[in-house]
Length: 579
Image 1: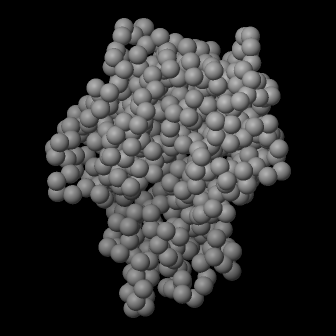
Image 2: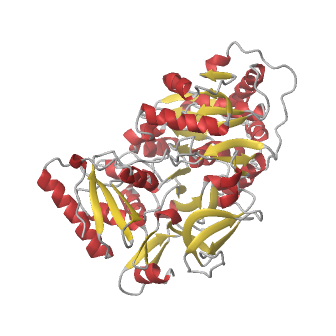
Image 3: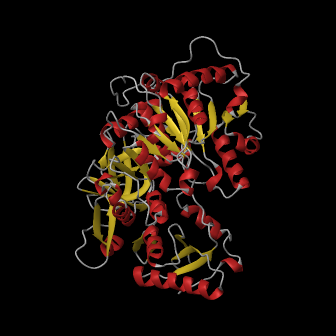
């Protein structure tokens, strides 16, 4: 509740990320009364952490980290619980000129063994000298650290007996590393995005000044995990650089009680909060006839959307459902970004809402052009605004030549927010980041009146009989039109067939009765054939078996790998309906 926060005092003038380093940004934010508030899923305030207290505690912890034997430039793994300890440790690293490495929580990794293996790969890739996490994960962290011999590891309490370094703390280098950000995907060889202090501040400035137009009195609210770029940069680091208060609830609490997010916004009069499409959809799924009573969302001026392919139908239904609670559809701010660019690359202007570009599907699939639809099949893509100032975008063909507007191709970007590279991975860096500064995002899209439109990931594109098909279109059709399918139940990808690519649709099935299972598989196959003109091999899989990234998105690449490895081939798990 607002009355539990520290009494306000006169705040210094607003500065929008015009600092050389994150430590300098916190020094300035600490002059005001704002800070972080951590809430439980039922809305109970668990900790209030003013920026002034955060600064003092982080500096003390920085001295203990250096006193324990760490040296400037060492990497420090931090399991990113949504609590004050993670934030204190992260900023302690900033003051000690150490490099924090936010690490995921176990939710998306299919149990203890999968999580420990993934954590171990990240810790080794970053070559950490220390690692910390919550008490409940200490045994798992210790197992993941086997063979690394860190200087210190455990909970932050492991530093209680460490000597405090005396004298002046090392000065952070504006051109040095601020942190490593691992991408959310669960790949065999995870890559750490190396973000410098200067790149972070350039992005935070673009977010605060040009993206969200931060002003005095703004308040942020978030459930996004701090190990993901949208949560870490958008709702922890950028707010510090813009002296904005933030209300935080854990991701796991949001998943259990998504409407608690809206309640937190309403009670605390938050003005800025972001989510991928699936967050808005979760709220819709849990809404009842009484939902909205007592909610006042009229304060929410910047309802950001990003982090996955934006579903226009979800945004439309959310705006309609919560209009009576004061939510305005114009508050939606579709945006585009990625960890390799620190976070944000483009924003829709404030007050414009989610604008869709409705294009001719047949021309898109055959000619790779986004021509406005006049008749026949059409597809609506949400427009993600214009690039942040100082950043450039080019849409290129398979030969690397720049394409004209409304031609679909691979998206390349350049600007001051881009990563220095993947940490300790020169070959992987060179494969995406050119010497002239252009980054291959791996995404496909086009420009329309200078606005960026994302159509999907290049690696996910399905090509059948000369047609380009986007897997999310196929997945969304099944989830929208079949009552037995829910959001997130379908993963579509292609594999090499004898003569051409074969389309495979994995569908989570909750029915045990053979007739019901066969009917679902047949319905999916008929829908894909009738609506999209393709024959697909439909494989029914158990509920909750489709893999997700650590940020909660469907991982098609892992689903495809699991399928090819035979993970879904047990007789009781599969029902085919091909041809």
